[in-house]
Image (tube, rainbow over all chains, first blue to last red; front, top):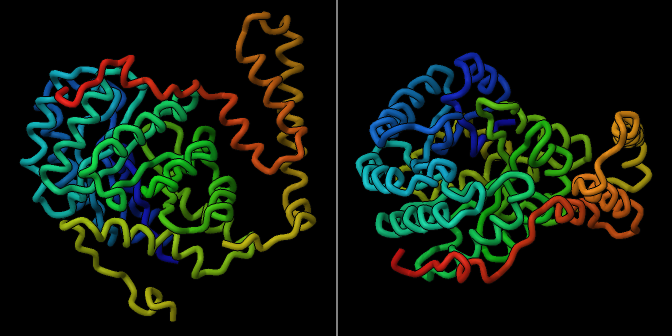
Length: 277
Length: 88
């Protein structure tokens, strides 16, 4: 089955991973800007990173027939440095018209601090000014519930935000309901230990249905599995779900969400399968 | 979306995995005790005990309840405490 991984950090992965993804049926990836494992010292460091995301990664993905899309921001962890964050936010518009740039992300909270909230709101303001979609990171582990609720407070307080153009990612059992009830898209990240497993993601699909739900690997430099979406597909098949239901989650939903971005130009890989033939 | 399997079919598919995961929890708690036990004030021990109690309840939202046990509380006046203003 063809699928799209809507959240994966390919700058942290090898070219062999692109080849494996292609063999597993991955036809497109979307890569939000994130924390590199260390704090960058200047806005120039982010300029180089955005160049990599918008120029080299699409080329590397293309070697294996995988289409690459991206999102730009300064992540929540480095947003604690408000001065640096403002320099980066001021630079982002230089890149927004490049092919494959879908919007602002992954912005959000990390430890749910005041500085993180300030920078989050300034990213949202930029997205509103430039009519961009938004991809949101919710915090880890014990901070997730509090941070997700804070993020929803800030988004719902802003009457300019079109909730159908916002994806709130890394939801789990205790955060998926408020995100969907508020009208946003929700993403489930399939990780070996933290976040969701393929089985728990399948449970959430069974509980809430496929509407506005995505699954992703969020593969990066830490413990993660870039082929986690095929694991989810297999779990759904084992449970007896139809191919059309599974395809809705792993292929059609990403197309619907990304299709709202002016820079999303997608070439379907196989018209026959896409049509369900 | 439907739930294609019966409860018996879920057990048929997952009983050994459930058994293995419960054994891992039991063995880990034994390991803590053999190492002298957790300190009385260690909140992680309290969280684990509360989580185990949730597993015994008949409700169908145990996973969500466990997540909340392991979560910091949300307070809806956080913006006032942070003195967030519209012109930040």
